[in-house]
Image 1 (cartoon, helix red, strand yellow):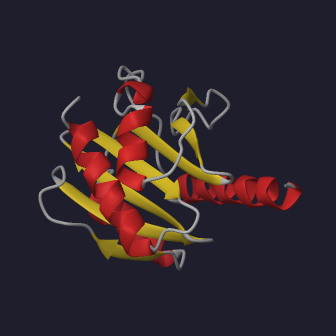
Image 2 (cartoon, helix red, strand yellow):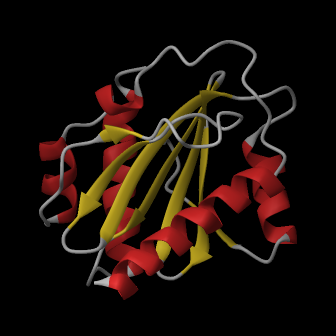
Image 3 (cartoon, one colour):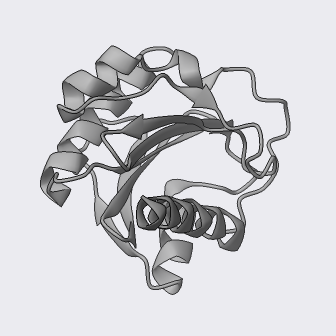
Length: 167
């Protein structure tokens, strides 16, 4: 149990470092879209095939990045979705380039998800789908116990497409 908690904390700390080190800036306007309104618990459960807790806004997250909506998946997995206004000069190519400089694996997502999307893999089996649509920047982060990387990526794309219909 303690090992699971440590693993989850390590993942979220790594996620925070990714955001800080990539130079993500404070949005010019306040967050207007509640990330918890973008996907339902049932949407996520349907896409990943595991039990999912109710989503809760993480108000303790780095406010320079924004507050993600977080869900617990199975016994120790995680799912979160973040939406923010992209900072000046912040775009998919720049963010992907910064992640690559930090030796974080980056790969293409299926075309047609937002204006431009890509995956990053910060480690520990976690994947992130980064999507830019207009002035919005959305990130789905997930670690699903027992799921392959391909299955997680397919679920993330399905869920991102659903979330994009609400912005």
